[in-house]
Image 1 (cartoon, each protein chain N blue to C red):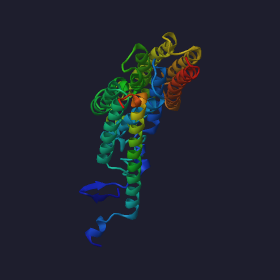
Image 2 (image 1 turned 180 degrees about the vertical axis):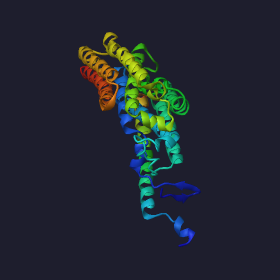
Image 3 (image 1 turned 45 degrees about the vertical axis):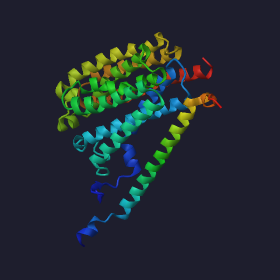
Image 4 (image 1 turned 135 degrees about the horizontal axis):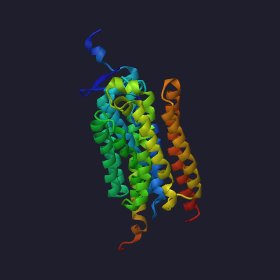
Length: 52
Length: 306
């Protein structure tokens, strides 16, 4: 077995990385949704209070 | 540890659950409860969504400081029975990964609280994280037997941060909530340290029983408990707690002193360990109960439009 083969990620390692990546993606999506919703809440009725 | 080299860095095969465990979920549960009490008990109005975001940010901030604590303490965690199964000593996550995880979550939680709730609460959360990681973990923990007395402030800040999320400041009421947890911390941790004394001694952490011995620790546990029992009922006299709180905090306060007295009285053998374990277990119940009653009282008040 040469050294390059030893360095190759195992299927288990790849699976865990995929799960971590999905978790990070979900967290970022949730954070985006959170900021969007909080912005709407904070603007509140003022969103209509502008010159037409 | 099964590592793979990815973009020049060693990356472990830690699972999402391993990362979550870095955040000390059980500590986080207590932080969520105490911060929630700070939010619902504070005068004024906060939109439920903004309140939820504040709570989430405080919880994540607490988790982040837990991860940073595990990063810094990985060397001693590996040698202690209580902490040897944590993700870093077990080889599931590298210390560097825990550091990155904790740092990123710290920044995100502070920014989220600052930007979406208010800057004062954000700054307060940043101070809390820095206090726990720098003052307690890096500085005091390995240097003085007063480590958890002063460091306990970090665990006591969450209700004040929750309060600040609503009011944008601090007040005597939030200070009382802080003091209850602050005075509760020494008897809680010293009870644990009494029956884990050898563990702490082996790794050179100067917990009170290691440095001053069991007798002195027992005296101090009793003293703090006698201070805590009356302090626990103070919320009833400043408009924070109602009649139910007064009754529960009085009864549990007396029980706390009784458990502490048992620890003070029984100093040898397995019975001494059992008494310390009993106090440790009861101390958790005590704090949860006090804050749960406060939460229930204020939730009912809000639901009834008060």
